[in-house]
Length: 441
Image (cartoon, rainbow, N blue to C red; front, side):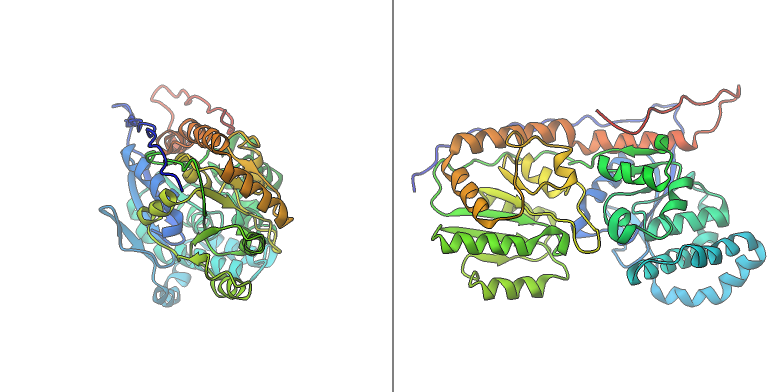
């Protein structure tokens, strides 16, 4: 292989810190996570950093496991043994807030959980609220934000019933679509002050569920900073392919095994790396072995974000094979796609809703259906041999992320919406300015 000529990486752009105005009061936010911090949810860590930049008064709760701190901020973990405290707190709230307890029991009969995980998350969300409500009331937050429409939003909904604090929530992927979405989604959709969706597709689904259009806002995730751009190899002998994501059915990894098998049968030299952890690990390992691909396809597990960057720097092409799984669960805009684009890596992705609404085919990335595998083989060979096309895709992908995937800009917009949702009238009694509808340009 010829030694590639070095090319200059795009310079990093300095980010302006968004500082709230001096007369703007600090917003007391209580953030509820399922598990925090989580390796596969670095986008939520970026969101927290921006909220901290905005000088929000943050309190973080992790309802199921997680760490005890995040970058100097304490994370209040809910422990399963605390469920025994329901013996005390359930009778307490039954006396103090009988209407709230009646609402909890009413929901179980009128909107029962749709599947076992939904049952677990609904119970834990309500139990957390009953046990920690007294503690959260002392914090006196302006707003409680559940980052997902499942367990965290269930807890936020129940807390509003118990202590009267308004709530906002995220609604993005499985919490909206899996088996019809969370069982309490219609009630949450009606009552949440702000609903954050990272795709237009999920926003439309929430409106169909009953969310007032003025409260459901489409705001993309984002990167805290933009990494150096890869130096693409002009000539490729062995194609280096990367994919990153949780090992779950909606990522379409078994389709990838078929693609890799077709590449090997054609005698095309390649190496593929799959970075991520999840319940499909054993099945995926077995499929790779049965297809005799262990020599060229490797699993690297769930690793910290800074280590994932080494894999991005290594690859020639990034592929994403998202599908709608048997339960109706699907991807939004998988954050690994903008991460790869930000490094100037050519990306091939299946036509998920998040892909179709954000990108133009063969402009920022290439859109290709999951099958047949032979079409992928031809596409991968064509790209590997077409350096100008790869270079053009890499440049356009980087430009798209700089324009649309800035965490500082996007998450600060979410902060402003939260602040406006709970802003109190001025002394003269005038109302705060009405916020524009959710879609961003």
